[in-house]
Image (cartoon, rainbow, N blue to C red; front, top):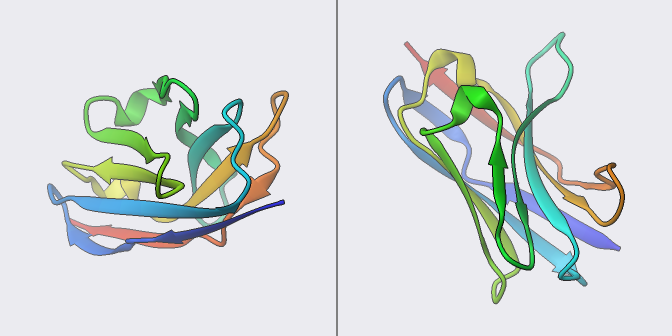
Length: 118
């Protein structure tokens, strides 16, 4: 079992920055992938970024490339999402998740709200 707790959300003006954190408890295997997703009311949850726990390989959705950076600290068992040059369309609840095997993310945090004002 893995428990995830996100933090770092808030209200920021367009062009500003925020750093989200996701603290994981429980055993994180080197084969796991950690991801960030986001969701706005009435829309499906959207993939944002992911990172492999072992070698730190990253992947981003096109809309955040060059603005967001995902990273992990294996000592602290924490994943980060550095968000720069934020836009109003980045407003959403951001979720951290773990993919332990296969293609499905099977552990999720409770989410943290990010609001970007224009």
